[in-house]
Image (cartoon, rainbow, N blue to C red; front, side):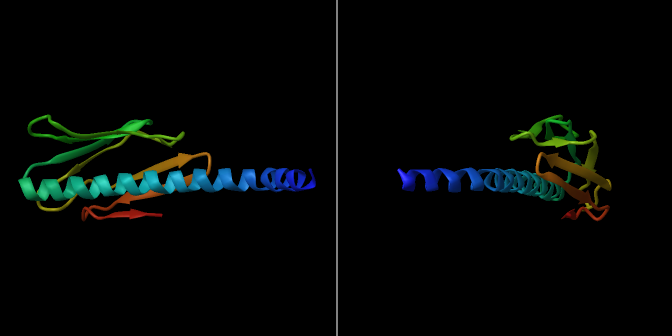
Length: 124
């Protein structure tokens, strides 16, 4: 009985930090996935010689070929993630992009993703 009581106390103490850790990890994973998709958009644009558009809403984002209108990738955010403002950025065949800053957040905090005019992506 005492062992079960001690186990219950330890579980009650460790539950909130574990939840915060999971939320933080989900935020980082979502931001990393978004960065990977932006890099993918740049590489497709360079490889095909066509402009790729990365557009988002508060609940997800879409990668579209501007010339054909073909949706290449559509992703919805999970685990209460959201973007503060909708933005659209184009990736050009010569490697450049429209400079934009995305703020991805959930209950654990905020990650800032910067798309530089050179087409490079940074996470802060």
